[in-house]
Length: 255
Ligand SMILES: NC(=O)c1ccc[n+]([C@@H]2O[C@H](COP(=O)([O-])OP(=O)(O)OC[C@H]3O[C@@H](n4cnc5c(N)ncnc54)[C@H](O)[C@@H]3O)[C@@H](O)[C@H]2O)c1
Image (tube, rainbow, N blue to C red; front, top):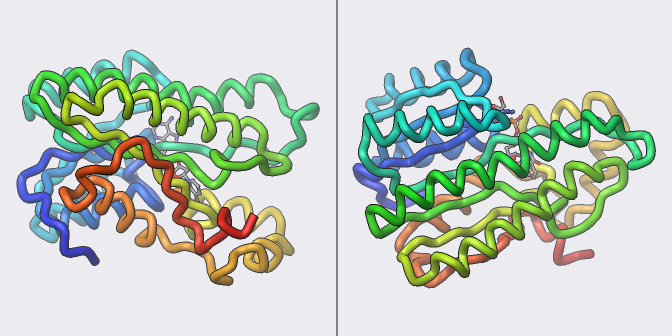
């Protein structure tokens, strides 16, 4: 629960049907924003949207596959038509990809992870920045990862995509710093969501082994990440741009 106010701000969240995206949508709703929830999973996306609307929020759902360029162009022309502006964008949709060493990774799986986690952020930022330039303000938060700051075994495509998200974030931050557009990234680690639950369910002994690597000795909650995202979008962080913020119980600091 945060004290930030986003009354009547128009917020887009990709991958809002689950985990961190859904919790971020809840947090923005409580802070008074109008939220555009987008996800490839229509059932989940519509479910969270209904939950927010039932609680009195202004929320709409738009199905989008962020790895599909024409889907993205359609999403943004619809936002332009319906709202005429976009104050905040959270580029959150992502997948883990297969658990495999680099030499064993299927090249098609590599391209899928890059398309969903990395190229989508480029596509979305292009359209978001065009709208924000036209209105003279905006704030973008991209979902990178602790895997954007260091290597992980069995996750080369995921790590590559999340490192690239930080590169895109920093470049855009520098390019648009004088245009009143801030661009930051959050780098979560081990946050309890369906993405992580799926990994832990396949590798039973991993849950405890990973916990021992986290200085705080607990997994993150989606709310921990949502709170950081809201702070990065709030006026309280108005001098911060180009940051890749670990949200990880001290994991990166301990490396
Ligand atoms: N959970 C963690 O520990 C963790 C750690 C670091 C980074 N992240 C990142 O945070 C983001 C959210 O992850 P999460 O843990 O909430 O996972 P999640 O699986 O709960 O949510 C991801 C959402 O993205 C959607 N999505 C997947 N492919 C899509 C596509 N092509 N188009 C549109 N939507 C699509 C899914 O349907 C889902 O609703 C991801 O980018 C992930 O890489 C998560």
